[in-house]
Amino acid sequence: MLHEIRTLVVHDEPVGARALAERLRTAFPGMVVVTTDDPTAYGHDFDVFVVDCKRLGIDIVRTLHTETPTALMLAIVDGLDRASLKEVVNAGASALVDETAPGDVDALDVRIRAFLARRAETPDARGLLGVMRSMADLVRMWNRRMDRLEVG
Image (tube, rainbow, N blue to C red; front, top):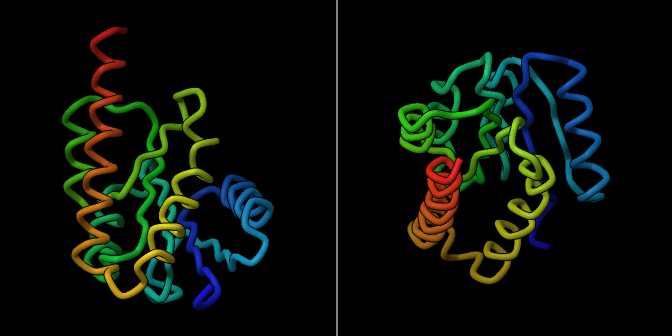
């Protein structure tokens, strides 16, 4: 590992933020996890951002993505219609975690592991190549979600 993995959990509910932080610390023992309800309080020197968009809004994702485009940006959402999904993706979310979808929160660990594995494979190509890979992953996830909406 090149450096410790730093994660910022931006959540407006302290209990939810602590639970998510503990989950991440258990899954990734070397990870430094900081929780806050103010995304500007700790700067932008993080590898992973987990942002609760339900109450804090999508603009936070847009701001953090603009400041740190190579970071993994995970947006926590609460059921999405197509317009909302498009808005979160366009704001810069690398992946979406729908708390109302069974298994989505469990998939959080998988998404972080995949991001870290890709970064370890080509640490010098995190820029454009990393963005392209994240977009490809996001399109695949979006297609699966749209398939579920059409079936349901």
